[in-house]
Image (cartoon, rainbow, N blue to C red; front, top):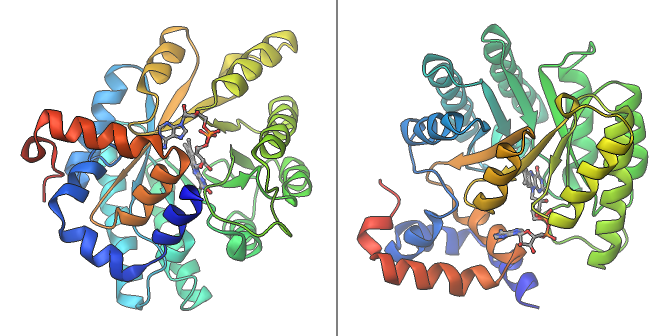
Length: 313
Ligand code: FDA
């Protein structure tokens, strides 16, 4: 019930506006968001690189309702790509199609994504299309096919184990040598399209993960689920799948202990680093994944002092 409420709250624009100006909410967000500017996000990427961890930067924002906002977000992505290259961190970003205008005009969205992909390609970088709710799954996969006409390693997509259709999608993407990030899925979905029980999502994740480890093109195993991570390690070792053939991916601020532990043990780890002013829906999804975070973060905010931990404007 709490998860559903938090996910419902994540879709309320009026509350976004209130939270954006609220100091306590901003303090809470700072746990999961690497500041508001490209500089702060690149600084986070540089710090992670020093530990041997790679990153994918995400300019927070989604469901834009004006073309100018989509164009501005695309321009910000190009700035971020340049800054990553200048700071000598691996050039890698994750982008939400609705932030590029998918709801407004599919052609606008495609143009914006193409500009980002062109700039990334010039910098030998990588662009991942994040996956949003099931209302966008097919459109996102279609966009991916169009933006990556050849077997191009510079563009990737995301598959959500929560969705029933993902078994077929994974097989299709494997046949196209596509770069896939596998996650569980962060959105509230109807039972007609998604598994309502967590145990079924986890079992589906494990099956898809095994398929991608055996036949995928450098899959991203995006989860903090230690049982699945340990299973991936054992599965890779017993099937002769080298550590260079895939990577684990985790979110900024989530299970930092596990990120460090995996990296120290010689596994590849990438952290998804979101930044920007539009952090409210992202934060709500993180709280929904682990409602205990609410108490945990509020406690640490109070202990460490609100002003010190607030996201810098
Ligand atoms: P699960 O929710 O079962 O959690 C397993 C354990 O991890 C928990 O018991 C807890 O210990 C820890 N944990 C998980 N979430 C936590 C949190 N927020 N705070 C603290 N601890 C937490 N989704 C999507 O729909 N589209 C996308 O494009 C992406 N992209 C993406 C990229 C990357 C790199 C990651 C890691 C995740 C995504 N996601 C996503 C989110 C994903 O779908 C999922 O909602 C979260 O990763 C949580 O699921 P877990 O796999 O971690 O398992």
